[in-house]
Length: 138
Image (cartoon, rainbow, N blue to C red):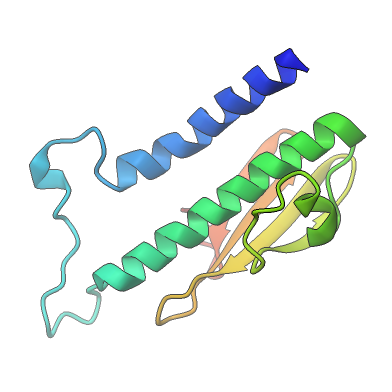
């Protein structure tokens, strides 16, 4: 049990690192204001949309950690949200488990941003892929 707890902590740290770096933690003050909110820029992302997207990504990473815990106990990945919530009942209800098996899983979540951005995490054997609904990595 102790080895599993240490592995879960290490997995959480590894998964959280890109989110911390993207949100400006650990960088200098000039990096934290990189989101453009200038009116007239069609590519500008509002702070609310950015927060909603980051929250969705974080929720999906939490679900990924729950999948790894589920696998450690069951030797297969959860194939439904209800199975996954046995590992972490606090998981966001918007997470959808598309499939789960002995070798991998696929899950998605829709962000609460104005574009309703969809994020996906897939694991096939040892390869993990994180993409949005357009296939762009995140």
